[in-house]
Image (cartoon, rainbow over all chains, first blue to last red; front, side):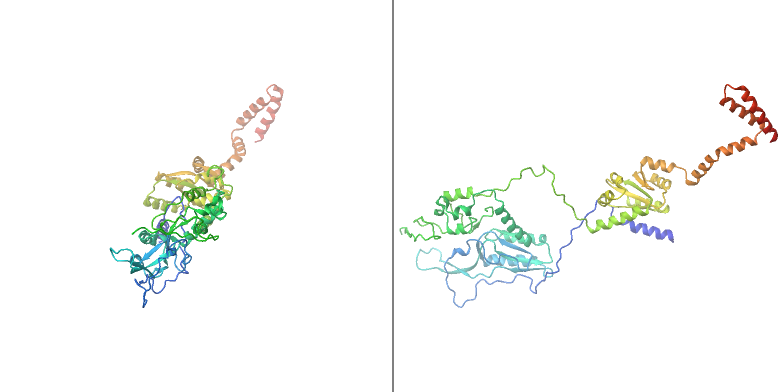
Length: 243
Length: 259
C-alpha cells in the first residue's frame, strides 16, 4: 500500500514541466473599472438631419483646417481611431464603419461609441452640365467635418489591442483622411514624444521663432494660420515630423 | 466669359493677412491637393527642421552607469525559499546533467532513487543563479549550466546513487556538495569507494592497539625467540660495544627463566 502511494506521488510529481529556464508571465490586464453599456454596438446615424426647412450653408473650409479643439481625448473606451488629417465624413463612410465594427463586436465583452456626430453640414451641388451662375446649387448630401487629432470611434471593454486592431485598421484605411488606431497609452506617448522633441531640438532656428519675430520679412509668405500652428498644418494636411 | 480678376487689398493691420497678396484668382487655403508653396516658405521649412540630439558616444560603447535591478517575480522568490530549505535539510546534494531523458526513464529513475530516499529536484537555473552567490555554496555556480537536475538526500548514500545512475547512461554526474564539502565527479567517486564508518573505526582501533597486540603475540611465543630479537635490537642500537651486549644478555635470560 505504501509503495503504491509512493508510486502515485512520484507520478503526480513527475507530471510538471521540466525546463532549464523560467518563464515569467505578464500579469493579465485589470478590467475592474470597465463597464459595458446596455447598447454596446454603434448606433445608426441619420443620413439627413431632421429639419423642417433645410438651409444652404457656405463652404467654410476652415472647419477642416488645423488641429481639432474637441473630442481629442478618450472618454469611456480604451482604443480609438484618430484622424491624422482633416476631411469630411459622409454617410457612406459612417455606414461602412458601423457595419464593419458591429459585425466584429462581441456584445458581451466589447463596446463601441461614436465620437463624431451625424452629418449636419449641407453640401450643395449643381446639376450636371449646368453653366456658371443661376444661384447656389441645391443641397445634395450632408457631411461631418473632422479636423486633425479628433477621435472618430472609441472601442473598449474586456479586450486587448490586438483583438480590435485588425478591424479598426481596416476601417481607418477606408476613411477619406489619414487615420491611425491608437490606445490611451499610445496617444499620451505621442503627445509626450512631441513635447520631448520640442524640448531637445538641437536646431536653434525654429519656425515659431522666425515667424513670430518676422525674420527676413517672412511674414510676407506665411499666413497667420501658419504662425499660430508653427507650420505643422497646411490646409487640411498635417505634418507630424515638424516641431 | 472672360475670367474676372479679383483685386482686393485689405488694410495692413498687424496679425492680418500678409502684406503682399496675389491679385490673381488662385486656390483657397484648404485644398484637396497639396498647394505649391512659395520658395521662401519652402526654404524656411527646410532650415527649421528637427535635429535630434547626438549622443557623445555610440549607444553600446560604454557600459551603462546605472545597473538595472530587475524585480524578481513572486514565483522566483517562492522557489528561492524552497531551494534554501532543500540546502539546509539535505546533507547530500549532487548536480547531474540530464540529456534527453524520456518521461518513462525519468520515472523509473525516480522510483529507484526513491527506494534509497533520494529525491530528484528541478530548479530553474535563473533561481539558482540568484540564490547561490548570497549563500555559502557560491562555488557551485559553474555546475548549474544547461539542463541540470539535483539529487538530494538527507543521508549521503553515494554508492546506491551511483549504482542507479549506471543504468541511465545519459545522466552525467557533474559534481556536488556532500556533508559541506564540494566534490567534483572524481571526488564523488572516491567518496563512494571510502569504507563505511564501522570499518574505519575498526581500522583505527586496530591501528592504535597494533603495538600492544604485537608485544602480546611476541610474549606468547617461545622465550628464545624473544631473547634473540632483543639481542638483535641491542646490536643495532650499539654497534661498537660488545661488553654492553653481554651484560643485558644475562638479564633477558633471567627474565625468560622467570617466565
